[in-house]
Structures are given as C-alpha cells and as structure tokens.
Length: 283
Ligand code: NDP
Picture 1: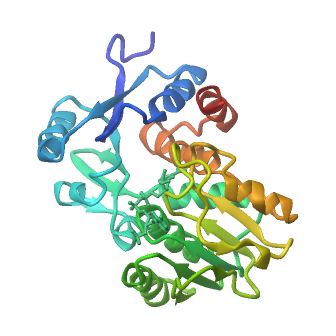
Picture 2 (picture 1 turned 90 degrees about the vertical axis):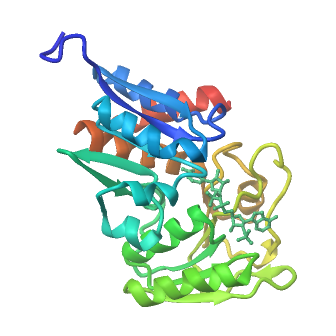
C-alpha cells in the first residue's frame, strides 16, 4: 500500500442514462494496469440532482469526474473555472479538482484530434464535420484549434450548423463555413477529412448512414466516425470500399478518457489496455 493507505483516489461519471456507458470498464482497466489505487464510479444522476451530486463529490474528496448527457452544459454553472476549449465549445465533459476549485474541461474534441493524428495531421486540412451537437461542436472547434485550414459544418438543423461554423470562423484561426443539408449532399471538392459526428449509425440503428453522396468520396479522403458502438459503422465500411482510410469512434473514446486520467492522476495511461477493455465489450 502507498501513503494513502486504504483511501482510494475517487473519480467517476454523472449521467443519465448511465447503465450502458462503458467508460468505467475502460478507465478501471487503466487504473489496474498502472497499479493506481483509484476508483471510477458510474453514477446515474437525474438532472435535478446534479448540483447535489457535484457537492457530494466535493465533500467526498473526489479528484474529478466526467459529465455526460444531459449534464454537459448544466454542470458549467456549478464550476469555478472553465478551460478555453470548454468555454468555446460551451460544454464540459470532464471536471478536475484543483485545490478547492472545480475546473471544467472538454476532452471530447481533444480525444478526437489525438485519435485523428494516428491517421492524419489536421494541420492545413479542409475538414467536413457532419453534426453540430455536443460531439460535432467539440470536433469542429478542436480540429480548428489543431490547425485545420477550413472547417465546413453540415447539420440537419441548419441553424445549429451555422452557429458552429460561425464559432469556428470567429474564435479560431480556421475558416468556418456551413453547408445546407438539402437532399443527398456531395462531399465538397478539396475535402481532406470527413468526420461523422451525429448519432446516426449508433446501436441499435446500426444499418443507418447519414445522407451523404458516398460516391463523391475521393479515395484520398480520411473518413472518421465518432460513433463508438458499433465501431465499424456502415459509413466506415462504405468508405473503405471506396478506398478511403478510416478511423473509428473507439479511438476518440479511448483518447478522451486518457486525457481525463492524465488530468486526474498525472499518469499517462496505456491506450492499448483501454482499447482492449472496450473491444472486449463491443466485440
Ligand atoms: P447530440 O444530441 O448533442 O447531437 C446529435 C447530433 O446528431 C445533432 O447534430 C443532430 O442533428 C444529429 N442527428 C441526429 N439524428 C440525425 C439524423 N437522423 N440525421 C441527421 N442528423 C442527425 O449528441 P452528441 O453530439 O453528444 O452525440 C453524437 C454522437 O457522438 C453519438 O453517437 C455519441 O455516441 C457520439 N460520441 C462519441 C464520443 C466518443 O468518444 N467516441 C464522445 C461523445 C459523443 P440536429 O442538430 O439536426 O438535431
């Protein structure tokens, strides 16, 4: 035992629903692998109880926690500070205790960029982001901050898409453009990276695919999907058939968790161990 004796480092997640969220398995696999005396508690927290849950975590000395749907925006009012990225994205998925202050961070987009870099560097790239919800917003902002030259946002609700494009254009060095979603949309010429950041294709709708003209995909385009379950979405299979390199949503899930573990424990965790824990679950 180390100097903490029988007192483990406490972390966890506040969300509802929570039962199907596999993050606990991934994070605790990393804790075990690195011999960390730390726990991750997956908690189902109703919207009306979020403030109490946060106060409880503080009272119990938690070093941090994740927030997932529907708390990513509501938690902001309960925190002392936000990182620049969390403020820009307007959502917090990871809270870190810094002394007696709670700092809100967003690791979704950072996790995506880390994962993307294993295939291609977004610097100078022209990126099409499909989706402007929490994931789409985080991906658009962080790929822009990672040096993408242009981020084009395509979203079913045009209003939301235009908002994210304006955010990228006004608050990052990248050019932000929005594209109206009318009929089957062709991937704009010159696109280097397509990111599918909607919930289309997520279990149980596994045969669904966003209404893009996949025949407009050049083989040089990298196609990424944020959907973690199933990892090999129909979109990725179709893209592979057209010669594209692809990136699944497990990479993003692993990397956003790795950023959180580093922030909470100071340990940079082994990604392969984390990915294996998820692969064991998703098959
Ligand atoms: P939100 O509810 O915030 O946003 C949902 C998005 O999907 C919106 O852009 C919405 O468009 C769009 N959408 C939903 N249904 C359709 C449809 N039939 N056709 C076109 N667009 C549609 O959800 P999140 O952004 O939080 O999550 C989106 C996905 O990202 C989920 O699959 C989630 O699992 C995944 N995710 C993955 C992570 C990872 O680490 N791999 C991390 C976080 C999320 P509209 O605005 O018009 O409603």
